[in-house]
Image 1 (cartoon, rainbow, N blue to C red):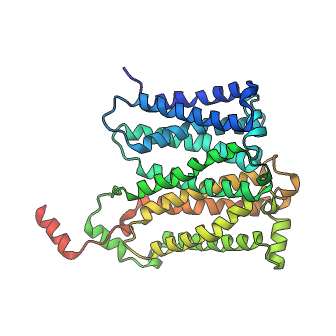
Image 2 (image 1 turned 90 degrees about the vertical axis):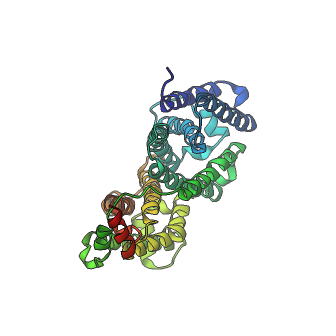
Image 3 (image 1 turned 135 degrees about the vertical axis):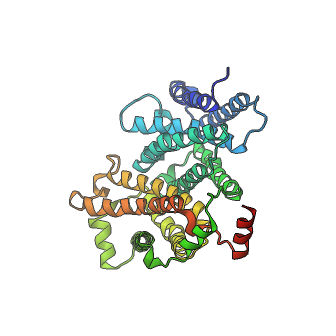
Length: 376
C-alpha cells in the first residue's frame, strides 16, 4: 500500500538538511559555480523523484510539482533560520559565504521561518486536498500572494542594498522561484471559483443594504483607509521626504526603514506603488455590490500582507539587525501596533468576504429567480 502523496512529499523534504550538511563538509562543492550547479542538480533530482511518486496517478495537476518542489526549499529555508538563530550549526556556513550572503540578514531569517512553517504547512495541506478531490484554490491563492510579495521585495532588495556588491552565481537560482509564483497565480485566477449556494432573495437582501447599515464593512473601510494613509506616509519617508514629521518618524520611531540592507526600503515602495492601488480597489469592492472578484483578491492580498509584515516586524526587532536600526524601546508599542494592524486588516477583510459572501455575489435578475422557483 502506497503512503499518501503528502507524506511522500514531507519525507522527501526532510532530505534537504542532509544535502546541506553534506555540501557543507565537501570542499569541492563550496565554490560559487559548483554551488549553483549542485543546486540545479538537487532540484532536478527532487522533480524526478516527484514524477516517480505520482507515476501511478491517472491525472496530476501541474501545480502539484510546484507545491512539492517548493516544499523541499521550505526545509532549506527553515534550516537557514534555525542556524542563524543559533539552534543548530554546520549546515549553511558554506552557502552564506559563497552562495547567498544576504540570507544571514534579519529580513531573510524571518522570511525563512515563514517559508519553513507557514508555506510548508500550506503546501502539505494543498497537496492532501488535491489528491483527495477537495477544493484547494483558496489556500493556493493565499500562498501565491505570500510568495509573490516576498520575491518582489527580496530580489530588488538584494540588488540595491548592501549585498548588491557581493552577488554570487547562486543568487540567480531565485529566477524560477520569482517567475513560477506569477505563473501559478495566473493559473489559479483563471480557474472557475467555487461559489457558495445562496438564494437569490438572500443576495438581493444583502445588496440592498447601505454602507451605514453594514457597520462591519464601514469599520473595514476605515481600517483600509488607515492602511492607505500609513503606506503613503512610509513611502514618502523612504523617499527622503524633507518634512519634519518624516524625519522624526524614521529616526525616532522606525529607524529600520533606513537599514542599508535595502529590504525595508523596497517593501515600502511596493506598498506605495502596488498595495495602495489594490487597497483602493478593495474599498470599491466593499462599497459596490456584486464584486465577486473580492472573494479571490482578498485572500491573495491577505497572504501578501501577512508575509510582508511578519518579515518587516520581525526584522525590525531581530538581533541580527544593528541596534541603531531597531525600534526604540520607548516607541515599541505604537510602531508595532500600527504594523500589526496593517497585517491584520486585509486578513479581516478576507474573513468577512468568505464568511458572508452574499453581498459580493453576482446579482440575480428577477426573471432568473422566477425560473428557479418554477423548476423547484
